[in-house]
Picture 1 (cartoon, helix red, strand yellow):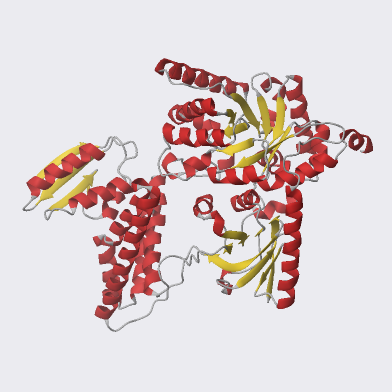
Picture 2 (cartoon, rainbow over the protein chains, first blue to last red):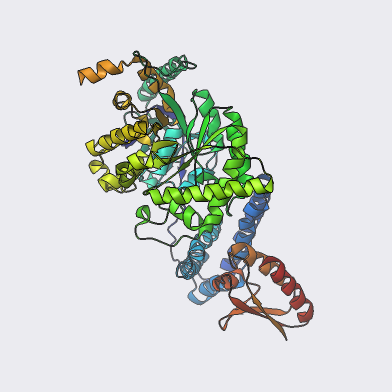
Length: 547
Length: 85
């Protein structure tokens, strides 16, 4: 048995096979050979196999996600068949009398570098495609088969770290737990694990070279321990613990259908955060009172083109209908910083968190913004949609948003297209917005405090940087005071205020939030019932008196 | 030899997908096909070459055709460019 330790992202026990998710960069040795013809035969064979794999992938993608998304595999086939690429490989094999693996790796690196050096973000990204086809060839040459071992059985995913685009592609039903070597408590993998309510560890001290793939693993999320090849005693103990957790979960289910009201009668709206239409099942299962944060950027991240008005409309309409009259707060596009999308062609920035992102993109690319607003206004006919604008720092931005919203409505009226009148609110996630919340409150219908960014901007701590975890204090008095101030200013103007950041799910603060008068908490679906339990057991007046 | 000039109107320029389609169309002919931007000419039948030009919207490319079926190739590729780029 091997035991590894990591930082706990979400509690619970997962027991299952380990699947190592490797960005398969492999070490290739340079070996002298005596028969270049035989070596080139190996290459041709590997190329034929790789071409066949790509054709199969293309056909699968064509059936499942359509021609536009499948085209990349056709492009990969052409790259593999490119005469410059092939000539380079053959030339290295023959002139240096070396193994074809070395020739493929070297050629791949050279071509990737050519793209990486280009003066164009999109083309720079294509270096990844070149690496992808070269690695496919290397995998075939080493006889390690085509795709990474997708066992089609639920597994514990072990990875260095996972990019948002990679987590999007994972089949959520096949993930029991995440264990990553890198990644901070606020990385995307961590947020995803919380949304899925599955045990997960980040910053785990292990090496991907340890040949974990396929072995039996146990993740003890609450204690931050990862066991590989557990002995019988550990396995039995963990199975018992898992059973107990399951029973606890079932007990929480008895809280379904109950109102969130404290012993002394203070009510709270408990909503769910979702990043994908697939999360709706979890929202309903956990009895959320509404959706407090629908991260619309996932619609953009999953595509390789700007999602059309119709594509967006269908998704918003579906969410509104499934939620059947319950409030659905949809946040407009929040892309940039750590969430990148090729086709936006955003320039590389030294300091993206403080850069061109979210509402700043929307206000300078009106065509993108208007498309989304048209879809949202139209979908509002089918349910109680509310629109939420991210990254606000000034009254001026709100005025500009209002102008666009009014003009979009005028346009829809002219075209005779039906639309609703959604509530429009803003995220309070910059210290600037918190400090002028008294003025902002007069312009909007609600506030939702985004504590992740508010904390990062207030404490000047990059949330992607694991080295800073020890300095990151989510309970910092500056943050709590700001939240209290924002809620107070909202109430003065007669609007409601909620919290949709990670802090909202922190049960050690639930009573404090109730005491501040927070009206709404939007949390990952799995956190709703534990918070409801706490609310039902709390007497706010007594808590205030006891402080 | 046949040739024509074309200014790209597609907002995304010659990205991977249209580059792939162009190469696919070019490979259907036996004649030598080159695509050039700013005096730099690349084979129109090799995707790395075409993408390597990193042609953006508003930029002009010159396509040249040299060989037995140059006439047909020139017409077909011209049509392709107008419809897709």
